[in-house]
Structure formats: C-alpha cells, structure tokens
Length: 120
Image (cartoon, rainbow, N blue to C red):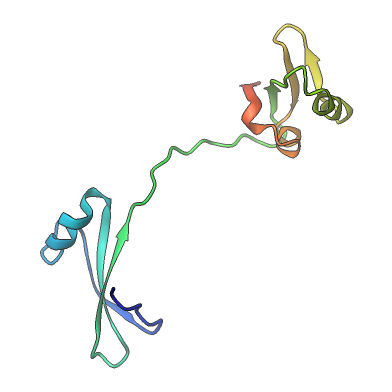
C-alpha cells in the first residue's frame, strides 16, 4: 500500500489522462481518470503520484424558490401529516387531489420527495 503524502508537498506536474506519463494509470482507471499529479515533498527527495477520479455521476435537479407553490401528494392514512400541513397554511385542491403549499413548507415537513407538481 502506498504511503500517504505529507501535507507539505507541492505539485510539480499535472497531466491529463491522454498525455504521456499517464498510460498505466489510464489503463487502470479508464474513463474515471480526470488527471494525474506528481508531487514532491519539501526536501525534493520523494515523489508522490496522485490521481483525481470521477466516483459518481448524477444529474443536478434544480431546486425551486422557497416561496414557489408546489402540489404535494400526501396519503390519506397520513392524517397527522395532513393536519400539520393544513395547520401551517397548505390548502387541499380537490381537482388535482394535491395539497398546495410553498416549497419551503414542503421542505420543513420533509415532503420534497412527494412533490408531484410545480405551480407557475
């Protein structure tokens, strides 16, 4: 197992995956490899090779404004949650069968995963 690089190192070279000097690491990490860095310790007697990898890839879901109105589906058997939403100003829309409330309230009641409609 390679040793941990001390905090007092400096980067002397940064290489992209396609550049010479990175082929072995490119074969090892594939398309997850972002860059390879060569570091030297403060005495200049040790070289450390570090890599930057992509470990996760997920879409960014934009958050709306806190005051934006959203439609939230709350199951009928969750009467306590429905009462709490109503007490804080949420309204029931019988046409859509959704509770209408500001996004801020949905977040406070931990209902962001139940949002099914964002209102203009």
